Length: 347
Length: 250
Figure 1 (tube, rainbow over the protein chains, first blue to last red):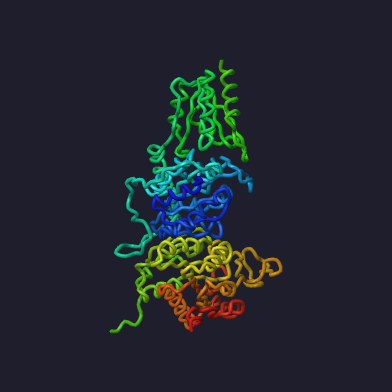
Figure 2 (cartoon, rainbow over the protein chains, first blue to last red):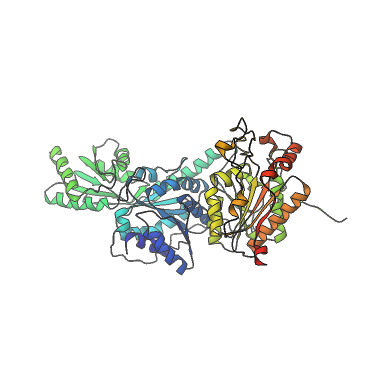
């Protein structure tokens, strides 16, 4: 199974009721897989006329209390931003998978991490955030799917999975099993027909003076709670490190190999990987910065996450960047060379 | 004493925000009556558009959602596919359905989604201040056609029923008008029929187009607005049934 297919099966195991999608490379295995598996499970698959339609079908299914998802790749995710903003405004859960490719524009179909800003800053209009999960391997992607659906339901917010073309196409052995759900609140807001209760209304328009301001404070309070409770990250060989290399997604694996090689050369290197890109592990990074000489951020972009690293470090140590955009994938040797250069400069 | 006329329960007993002479109040009432007569209030979900009727949920006492401009047929698809026993209807204006949402309505009809669409055609963008809609009549003065709609550069009025009638997935298409009691009565029958098809799980989309007065944006008095429908709109938007599943079955 490639990453795209394993993720799709994991969504089914996580009780996803409906998948809505539109073809785009490099995630075409997802709708193909779902078109076969969802009907087998008696669930819903629709190939939509556009990504606009896909995200709005997710919006409709979610409003009735169903677990709904879509997947796409960068240009398609741009089209979905209107709907994602409406999901955030109307407080509807949804899972959106972005198998990133090179951009801007039509770009190419090679792996990239160029959509970090779009995912972590909200992406659409308005003052909102999207929980963003970044798996680094197929097993982790599979494991994050039930969490994504749970977080969406608990916080009534869209959750984005930020993967990339490598992860989507890569084959790795995986264990697929049904995970117990977290404690989920009842969906008493859902549109299920006004039987024995007053009508339910799902909306994002508030015309009364000050109402949208209050609505934003309410959302903000929830975002603060997410920042407090839901940060996920992984670290390695941090204790006596003087250089820590930070990366997310598949790039983090390349970086880890480079860190191992650097350590063999006697370089005091460590490794840090955010799993949630929003909420960002700022506190953890800030704590590490106290002991460090330098942070090296490596991305498949020309520097997006590095801005969050700098905000977290807040000047406690230098933050250096290395990245390749538009389908360029940093190699172990390239990362190692950057680590060596930093080490020499520090000495 | 026998009650011969009363407010239908699904139409809430509150004043609306609509302008004097507006057709939305009538259209809302007809939808509410159809829902009550069919006894489907408790399993109906309505979709409000972006436009003057965005607050339709303040007047219709069913579960409702407000969605992005033009996207109602896609949202309806998501709802109906995951809840085949619920009755799903969208209520959309001509800016919403015939301009920004053209792709969504065509493809919902194309797929034969088992939903009901109430389409309000008042030949103008009402809420944003009376701009040209795709349905604006040739020569009609609007905020964005100050010299009157010039068909050589802006096209002719978009005829939605005619356009959809070629799609097998659209099973019932009827155009009515809200300018005369007799026509309103016909509109009511059409709306009820459209819902009934969905209740009976007929295999496709039903749409009722309502020519509806907008005296404020047309800058005429309410009585003149009704005359304008009769004298001008119907010429470009002929009334009648374009397609009916019942007829096809015979």
